[in-house]
Image (cartoon, rainbow, N blue to C red; front, side, top):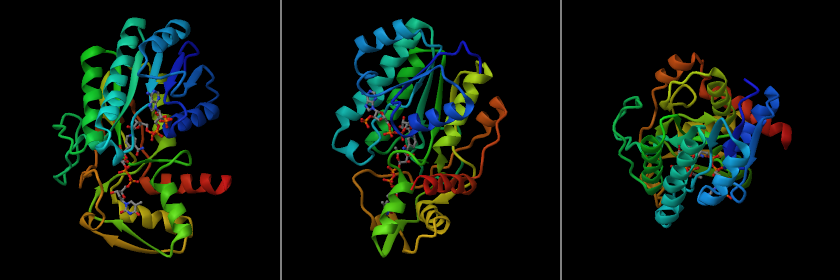
Length: 290
Ligand SMILES: NC(=O)C1=CN([C@@H]2O[C@H](COP(=O)(O)OP(=O)(O)OC[C@H]3O[C@@H](n4cnc5c(N)ncnc54)[C@H](OP(=O)(O)O)[C@@H]3O)[C@@H](O)[C@H]2O)C=CC1
Ligand SMILES: Cc1cn([C@H]2C[C@H](O)[C@@H](COP(=O)(O)OP(=O)(O)O[C@H]3O[C@@H](C)C(=O)[C@@H](O)[C@H]3O)O2)c(=O)[nH]c1=O
């Protein structure tokens, strides 16, 4: 990566922010500033303007988001503020200060009612507040800033912060049996893999701006994902597959949200790991720290 690339990471202490920090450490990249929700509050244009003025970033990575999918149903205003207005504020600053924005979005922008690989240009018709506000954020960025990459990812997990893998490991240790939905299908994404691709895109100097899909390879259900987590971590727990109807949640989730990654693979010449291989790496990382 060119040493001239100064990078600001908003939401820098969240799950993906910590994954980016880990990969930066591995790669010896030091020109990156990780901002928390106070010093880098994306809802405060005055703070943002001062930061951009002082730091003159070449790239801005937006990991800041409202990610509590069920809670968003009760807090649509706050979810919209962070996921739409926050994204727009960053896009305006990037435009004013000539920085490129890498923004993270989600498979939940899709309705997911057809078992067909989702391409970037497929119609986005979100079915919950989180998905609607994330889509609104994408649209703001597209209208405000040409120099952007929107990376839609899905089922993000890692050794950092809260996520499905860590929830399963915690519940698996506490309970004798667990029931997990088997009729919602998608692809997990290891945060370290996504972080690596984000840094690869920055290093590539390839100005192919636009929207890209990125998850690990393969297809699974939440149930099969949980089964793999317990197998690989040698957790003894009785696991039962259940239909979504038996696990009511505030937010409806897409039944099928497997994304087609052809565009990102061809544009940036990357190979994507299979989800189970990445899960092995994550479980090993968790074992090392526990
Ligand atoms: N997690 C997942 O399964 C998936 C996530 N994504 C997307 O990936 C991105 C990263 O997700 P992930 O790292 O898991 O999410 P996290 O919830 O772990 O991190 C989001 C971070 O944003 C911070 N934040 C909230 N409000 C603001 C604000 N106003 N200004 C600055 N920072 C703020 C949060 O701080 P605090 O915690 O203090 O509120 C948190 O540290 C998000 O855009 C998300 O939509 C996409 C698909 C799947
Ligand atoms: C804890 C638990 C969850 N589940 C189900 C509920 C849900 O359908 C599924 C996943 O639950 P979670 O609440 O952990 O994950 P969820 O917050 O729905 O995950 C989503 O987060 C947002 C931010 C995204 O962008 C998405 O790509 C996706 O990763 O597992 C069970 O069936 N049994 C359980 O014991």
